[in-house]
Length: 350
Image (cartoon, rainbow, N blue to C red; front, top):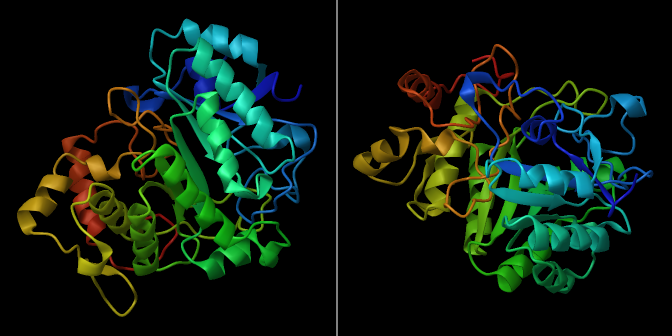
């Protein structure tokens, strides 16, 4: 069961399409169909935190990605299920792994969903599997209107440690940024995205500088909070504290919306944000409805985030990190408290 005839889909998508019981908490629901190309051979990369890495010490049947199984279905079946979802899924995303066939197979799948599903389609690119970013013209011609790169780490040192030579992996920082720049050129400003993961060891200052770099290339940052995946090299690595993550989320929102810039922000000796570089009224307007703390991702045709990944960064019984819905009054009150928590990197309990 390999691509392009088959794909893996997220467990949230499998529930939404009726393959499993839909059990999302707090009346949230998925708005984007996330898919991955799939092969008998594992991903050729060895990223220290990723559930798909080839060195992960788990049985194949227990292999997960972002903590949950990604079941495999025929593309024909997924397309048929999508046609009967009532329009709930507002965007399709086809993701690559690092595999020699992944780019061509991703494009073939994108072409089918663009032609048959009637939804906008995004591509999640593995630059290592392409080598020549100019080939992304083929992805646009297949029907994708947006593309993103998962750079994940905020600094070249952390990237190399967890994705490159530090884990004997094939990825190179410079190629990922070159690819992101090429996405902006081919797809246009605002049609490029970058995935970044807070909590791999960077300071808030370093992460926000990287978010600004991406924005200046025409890319919007889709922010994730690190979550330890069992069986990976970072299974015991702590999650970032809520204070760390909330401040990065707010800064990311201000940069993505062109409301503020990294150079205008103030940081303490530990690299923590102590000033966001915007007026009090603008800051309050950003915080009061909780939008900066909702999941960030590619939008649907209505302009709202479609790739909302319900509970993808969460631990049961803990406060949420990325809200898949508009935060309620009580949620925003907690967020305000967390924003002002400077008690340390932590393990996410605060």
